[in-house]
Length: 509
Image (cartoon, rainbow, N blue to C red; front, side, top):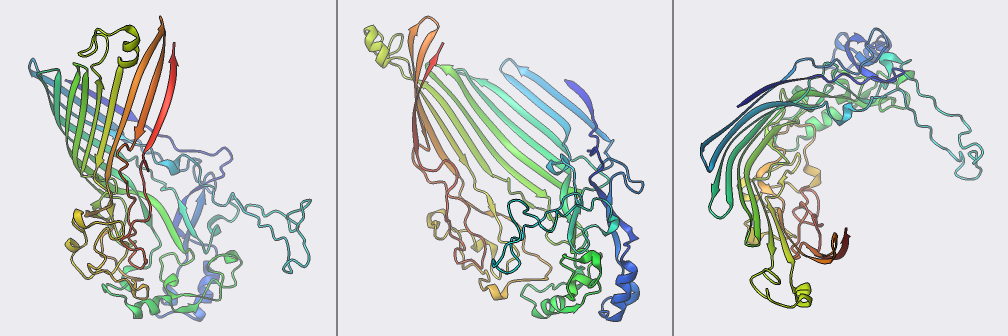
């Protein structure tokens, strides 16, 4: 038995010159609020009285206005206990158990700074009269000058009228609880069998969260296209931000704007996204391993996994209180891998041709055959925010009826007309389905090896390797967009592709 305790601390990223965003101040009125409210009061919409129209919040920057230099406040509570147990009830049996907590890093997006406001693109406009004359030349491709990034100078007014994103200021490291229980037994003939239960639970997983959604009370709950709601939310109304210089060049610079925009919690932005530690996952599996160690020229290793992987790492609707619990896109119910090595019983010291001349042994002896098989259940499929009027059990087709042109039942109840698709609705159709899957993996590789001794310490190895030996097609996922003419059909392949045969020689000394 062994017991351990590990402590992990991940400090925040900093930028040498503080050229990075820090977060979002949701409480302070934006500097443009007085002007925007005055303009709004001239032509308000009934849903938001002038007294309730606010433009709170804006982006903050590291090292500015009392903000710390770190891009986030680190998590200091990362204690990771470990426990392991091994018990041998008999000379040929071993029982093992273990449990541990393992912390992860903040994610790829936290390995770099978030430099909104500190980068700026300058467009090359070669002509102002459709090519009759040219103002941009190689000697001066930017005759109007180079646009300079505003940096943190705009403060809360940075990126007004645009969609923004930032790191969560109060960081929480995601962590995984892992546990296992296994029984290993040595059998006759140098054979070892292992049966294990392995599970894990993910906690505080990052979930992309929209802080500026259209409130749910304005969205349709109808399973069909609700045209009155669509017309209501997409209706053009007076834009209170029109004429305010800070919105120039943004999506809110026009004289009119969709009503839905003014219903958002932060109407001066078109979207506010942040990764919050609201997600979780769990995984349960039965894992069986069978190993025949090398004897009589044969070695074999087989591993089979039967598992279920569920997760909640995204929201079905931006206004949902918690992420959607759904089968993971990394859920593969069954996975089988078998590898084997077989030394052909030919030549000196083998069963056949053991007494042959040296020249015949050089040709016939020492050959080794290696095989590899991989089989796996296909990926889970989903159909987006679709209108579906049928039964889910009618979507999958029996294996005998699946074709590349019709992988699942496209007539099970999907609305195919693009003019009737959903918009501005509360979605109820799940993201993915465990019983509806793409093509899996069914691949077999075969290799042939032989070494030719040259002299002491020198040998030449010949290799012939075949990939996808049986030339079994590996289909990519089918089209799952109900409005597409290719809906339900497979138009490409994946995996190893067609059979490949390679020959190689290697000098080993």
